Image (cartoon, rainbow, N blue to C red; front, side, top):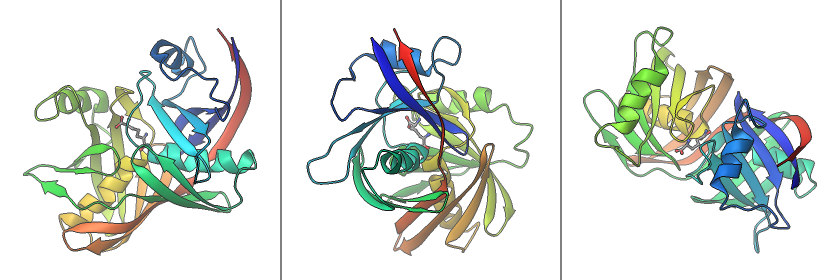
Length: 259
Ligand SMILES: N[C@@H](CCC[C@H](N)C(=O)O)C(=O)O
């Protein structure tokens, strides 16, 4: 079997992108998806995304982690698929599409894609961390020295430990740079390693920092290992609405893969 694919990255979070409007790709083939994402034996990516037709909206996004399993929302992937939809001529600069967590609006402004995230009504504050779901589950924890942290070691311990256990959580470590700038490193569930950026992760960090009073700003800059993202939001009682994730989404190359 031969498959044409595109490779995209958003601040270093990279994806194999496939136009599946004809529904020819076998979504149940976990082994195949894992192989395509493998950095030595396959194309190499943090995840694989299918673009499919939707009855009422511009398109549908189906996201798989590099372990081959379909997962919850991917913010950087959501921004990349918007750029892909424009490349395919499905949309101009504004779009509405469906992902696993529901309807998303997005717009392309120059090289940047602004993606509206789901409202977040429930955040849990613990002694050393905050837990919230921004489309995917996120543990957010402040750390004084991000550079020295063994993200894979510490992150996997939290991801597999109580209360997350088998279902797991993504784990974000955060350092405050200023009132509206934070640095973030993320351990991603389903990749089971640090990735260079996580869109739902930085969204979670921005909201969590506001929630615990580390910032009163509602436009936050997030430095990640692969670049810079921004998150804007409005406070809504104990939760947040009108949440936007903003940053670059780039096509890297096109190819054919056979198996
Ligand atoms: N990289 C993503 C998050 C993808 C989902 C995550 N690995 C999970 O399974 O929860 C992002 O940019 O949000």
